[in-house]
Image 1 (cartoon, rainbow, N blue to C red):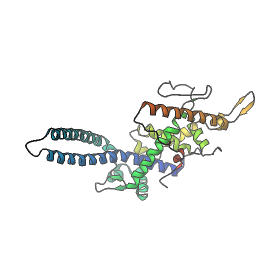
Image 2 (tube, rainbow, N blue to C red):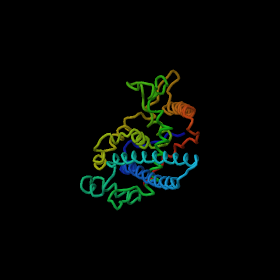
Image 3 (tube, helix red, strand yellow):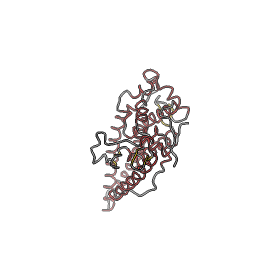
Image 4 (tube, rainbow, N blue to C red):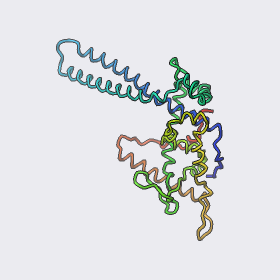
Amino acid sequence: MKKMSYSRILSDETRKEFGGLIILDQLMRYDLLFEEREGLKVTIDKLEVIISELNKGFFHSEEQEQELNFQKEELDEAKDAFSQIEKEIEENEKFRINIALVEKNESGLESLLNFLEERKVLTVGEDNYYWPTKKGRELYCQLVEQLETYIIHFEVFAYVDLENGDFGDPKNDLLEGNRWSDLRVAVAEFKGIDPFRVVFLSMMSDEIFFENPDWKFDLGLGTLFDELEQIVQDQLGIDDLSYEDQEGTVSGEDVIRDIIEQGKFLADKSRKSKIETEKNIQIGELANEQILTKNYLW
């Protein structure tokens, strides 16, 4: 596998794509809950009709009583779920974007929102709020797939002890000090995958972008991804991994190739262990990491 060369400067095009994906992610938080609530409404209506039919007549057999009680329990569960969804919808109201508020308070986002409308990712509803379109929902599913693929193929390289050849475990190890190196950027470059996308997916997975309540302002200002760019610039590259031993120079490519093989072995072992522990998990085909090379907004 040949080492790929990538710029460590984040392009305006990539900033726009990442910004669009962040907005879509936020709007989908409400959209998915709204869709789930509408589905629960249909379920509740159907159950109420069934119960009404079962209640007819003065005499019921034991089987009819059992069926009636079962459907009542189902209705109670559906109503409880509906109440919970209502609360979550209220909590996620803050993620919605109203076109009037954008024009008044968040004008910096206007060009990005217009870009997403032009790409038919978003549309403005009759309520003057932005909503994901069918294409937008499909794009969100692809983003989720990329996030899952990132976790499978790259998280294992976040903490590597280069001196001892160990991989840190966030669940069991104290991941502090200078012992650990983050090699996700070097691994991405070696595999021919844009390191900016790998770091972006990492920050999306950890919800780092939204820790600042003013993230919309920063996005409109164009500074939201400055930290992402700095992370990529600061991390080790392939050439930084070369070293000297008694036999001469060991190239960075040889080092990263060996690290990738070890990381793949650990990732596969962890995945199999999880499948054996949680019986409900089905063994499926491992997601192809090349999905991380896809850009869906251009």
